Length: 398
Ligand SMILES: *Cc1c(COP(=O)(O)O)cnc(C)c1O
Image (cartoon, rainbow, N blue to C red; front, top):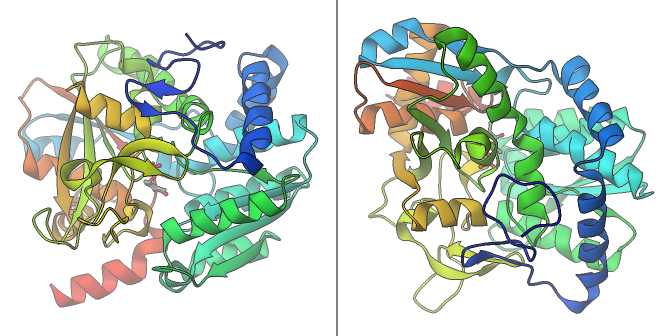
């Protein structure tokens, strides 16, 4: 049993079944231990939560709406609700976690926050939370992502963060995490603000907890809209698994609610150009925790591919690995093309331009049928402003 209140099946060492744990070099053990202690001390603390809740309400704009998408529902012959995380300040769910962790960093007396980012959303959220709380901020970002997510790089700089372009490896998200961890080893006085439900314990549990406000609100809002707290399905895309963890959190223990996790298939799960970790991966250790990893036959970490920088990660959070391996969640894969088609449909039929990541969750509607009386909640994790260049160039082509 964990020492704090959790609705997830996690043990004291941060294991969800076989997945999770903390595999860190000796030099980071003290840091991780201090973080775990701080998390356990504050996560259920009344004053900490009051401060966080006030920020979520007045700064982030929570609760985000639960919107009944009527035209989309009609098109697919079912009842579709969108949880509008795209309306959060800074444009995605990432800010929920960033604020929680920066508040914790402050409680721990830290002055310098470091973070990794792929699509740049977590970098922007971290830079924002740091600006708000007067913290120094350094963001590590693969050089490739710096190029394909340029507007977010500019935002981070305007917010006062330092952006370090990582030139090692594939110059993408995995390399940014490696670099941030290396920096943390060399500067143990800094606070490493992880953006997804990955990494060594307590990160996956902490990130899930700070994102759990999403499903807490869904229950309340669905009760108001439909007279019942439990939908038939909750659908979320998974990169590392933080928006899914937040959207699933209060439903994991409710067996009547189907949990649907959507991976990025890239060009297809039967091609090497994919990021569908749960479909093609095998057990292994990445970034300090045991999970499912995309590996080459030689046991090296394989290079993932997705049109979406935020889903382009060769691992998966331990909670999602556990839910999938036990059959508690259903895992789908949506291709680049499927995500683009879903984005176009949402834009044309509902007037909402989704983030490329979220478009994968929407793409589930094309690969799986739902019944006419099903209530399907799709977590719209972010908005598409950052992806406009990609959308425009792909739509010109197709
Ligand atoms: C980062 C991001 C994701 C993927 O990360 P998770 O940790 O799996 O949620 C999904 N959607 C958006 C909008 C993002 O910014």
